[in-house]
Structure formats: structure tokens, C-alpha cells
Image (cartoon, rainbow, N blue to C red):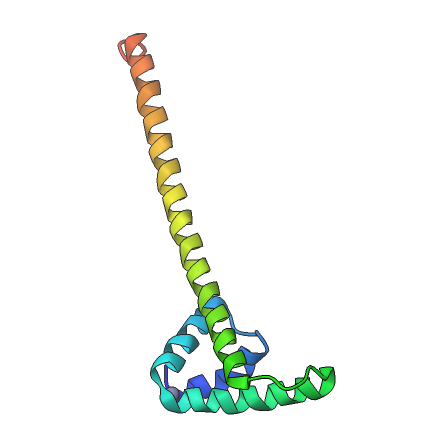
Amino acid sequence: MTCQEAERMITPYINNWLSDEELEQFLLHIKSCENCREELEIYFTVDYGIRQLDDEIGVYNIREAMEESLEAAWDRIKYIHVLTILKYVFRTLSVLWLTITLILQMRIWWQEGFFLK
Ligand SMILES: [Zn+2]
């Protein structure tokens, strides 16, 4: 992902509009690119400032809030990865189960002489 692409994703990121795939790409870029990270911090500060005015939450450490947001986003990505792995595991298991069932059924048919007729 280029910096330009990442910068275009900052607002969607803050508003939770990114797809899981986009989110992962964005997080990876933010992790490795200091410039975009700073850019995100600026947007985050502005956004947070506006919301703070609305909600009157009081003084809060914005950098910490951003770190928490990034951590939560990473957690979501990790969760999705686990789900994907589980999906593959279950799919493999059901294929395996089907194969075994079929083999057992063939054995029963073979024992009953089904194939000899
Ligand atoms: Zn960048």
C-alpha cells in the first residue's frame, strides 16, 4: 500500500468504514510508516476533539486513545484470522468425515457382495 492510499483510508478508518481486508492493509502500513502514523494522529486528534466538544467527556490522552483504537483494530484482524483458520479446519474435517463415511459404506456394500452382482 502506498502512503497516498493509506492517507485516503484515514477517515474511513476513524469512522469504521474499512472492510476487514482494507483494515489489515491499513494497519500494516501504519505500523511501518511513521509519516502516515503522524497523519493518522492529526486526524484522530481533530476527530476526537470534535467528539469531546459534543460529549463533554473531559480531558483525555488522545495518543492513548489512538493506541487503544489501533490495538482494538489489530484484535479484530487477529480474531478474523482465527475464524478463517477454524473455517478451514472444519471444512477439512467435514471432507475427511465424508470420505471415511463413503469408504465405510463401500466396505459394507463390498461385504454384502453388492459389487459382485
Ligand atoms: Zn505511509
